[in-house]
Length: 525
Image 1 (tube, one colour):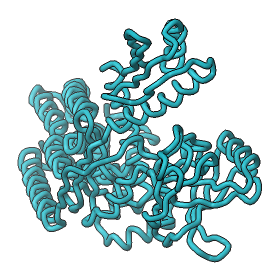
Image 2: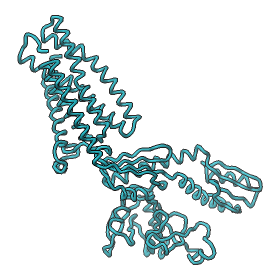
Image 3: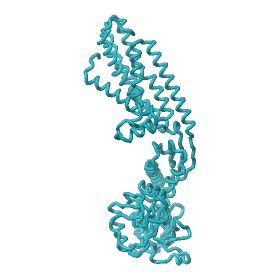
Image 4: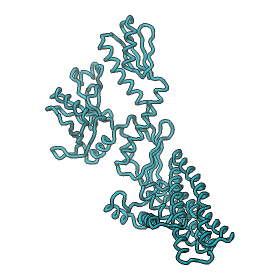
């Protein structure tokens, strides 16, 4: 155990130096650290530890996903599929509608009931079909399918919210599922969450649809809206309305990019680009419908309704209207992130002031410094020179923890500070085991060199077992925990790894160097 090759010495020195370098930005002004980071690569030093919501203040939002809206939309879409299937085989029907979370209609040809049933299973394979008397049919979702749809909707909503918030520049948000239909959102450093709420609250479901060519708006208002059509108002002026087809030509799902830009008149606009499938659909639709109004519908409102003057075959286009630069920027963010599958309703909102966070930081600093001073003093009092060497290794251990948190940009929360304080006490635990074993070997009559060698050899197994079990417990907390629990487990795991390194490698290197240089007759321990 006293054999220390040159490469191993170099590794210990390099790791300790990197820990000091990467932790150093946490002790300088934030502006200075940012300027250093700007000239460094992503993996370079200059980053500071991210502080969680409980330390730097911020906003807490709880949103509810309206999964029932998705169920209703699917039912409406299935109604169109049912209508098309029946028309293909020329089977008459009546009262095709959505009622009480079910699609209901009556076939006018009861003798073809079996054929209709086969068509329905094709049009809606995931729905439960019920055939009643007199040619009455009903299609519903099973409870298992409804639960599966809502779970997929919630998971997709969480991913979309994460994309939107990350792109808006918020630092290290915490976004996680809560219950069956809610999303918990914590935004450190955001004191006014209104702008974030606006961005997240919009569904951003964009579709491209044609204006009706079978009936005018005035006729629809007086005689009723024809099947497969709907009246949609303008986003700029609610008094302006359009009669448009429900059939979607191209949807926002085919968008691959959207950027805030300016049109030919130097007015704010949004340029967009489709993928290959969307570009082909868009080009074919515009080529076959020159001089028709092509409505761009965002969240059930027409944001632009240009007239197609010529075919647009490049797979890209531009949305113009009465936009401001801020509105085009937000719209571009929404379109790039994707559409929320269901609306969000914010049911709880809290703001944590930075003053409370500063109090927590100050209390954590006092606890960390006081704990470290007591540990340092105890080690010197109990083990003399060897205790001093262990104290030096402890300082490197703290530098490695801060350096790792800075490098990986892990979020430090108040429980995370508790994990660091706990690690300070645990960091010298391995040294205590080794030093006590060395004492026992020295009392048994061994020479200093043999006592140190035996002490490290016989204590190493106990040290690994003790730290490994603690690390497994912290790993379980990280996997199954959330929020502050994860913050505690992260700092604890990092602390265990660094304390093992400093105890087994750093302290041993200093002890070996001292022994070889001084050749003591007896150990000062």
